[in-house]
Image (cartoon, rainbow, N blue to C red; front, top):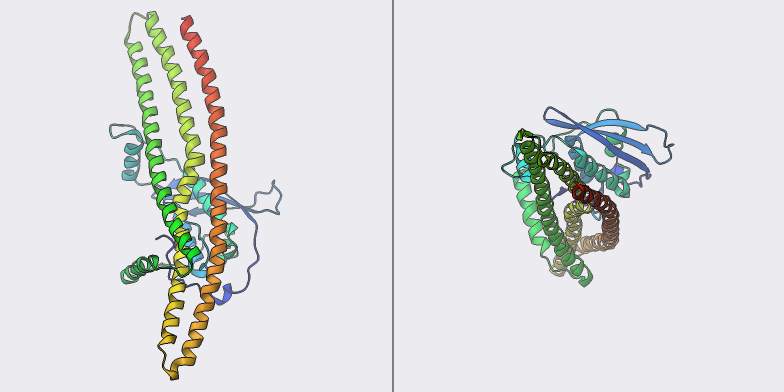
Length: 380
């Protein structure tokens, strides 16, 4: 699972006190490829600053985001927090670019898709916005340095042994299927599993549909190239050649409209669907951490039931502490999951509304153009 750390919900001494909430306004302006790394330009201002203020502009690589994500999970009390999930690393290797091209345009395509990090910038900007909006993470010192210091925080080596990883995976599988003593939470956990599965499937189906539309648009472009090539080879310069060139121009405009449709879908519904197909895994991890506290409480209760008189007091204290942590975690997790789903529903609502509005505008323009094109072709 993503964001799986060895943090058990305890906090460091310097994180126990309530941190002041800083209302950052962050934008990932652009990105550039530097060898085998991608450098992102990030502009950060506080909401109190005037719009004309430039704020702080820093340069960060994807690896800096990875280290920030690790620090946020390791240095803060994330026990009942749905931690924002870092988006995937941008494709920068030649082999990766070739695979991406074949996937989008088809295996027969001889054209390579150029570097375009627009989607990566938007995804990383959303990640930072979600982190900033989370009160448990907002005051983190590493986050502050990441956003405001000229040099990124020094990345320490993050080591995790194979044995630890396997143990964590086994514990996750074992606790994930643990029956809950709270019927409400059992329902919440089951719903989260089904919702995450359905969202991932929907995202995969959407991506396949989107790729099919891109390949169709690419074939249209090939068709117009053939029309122009055929017209250019006709040395008679007759009306048919003229009509073919003109018709190719109309088809090019139609292809631009298809590209715009794909762009709108990716920027609205596609972006939100991809975000929550990953983000729901984090919600499941939050529920799993609460289940782990439930198991600890149940184990402490069982140990107390079997306790010998000499261990009774000590085990009673342990059971009371485990029960307190479990109850507090349950309360906080319930609020956090409710907030998460409210934000998820609003995000999809906004995405679908924006999709409809922009598609109507694009379709209206294309309808008017095609009507004009048909009239002109009829008059030829």
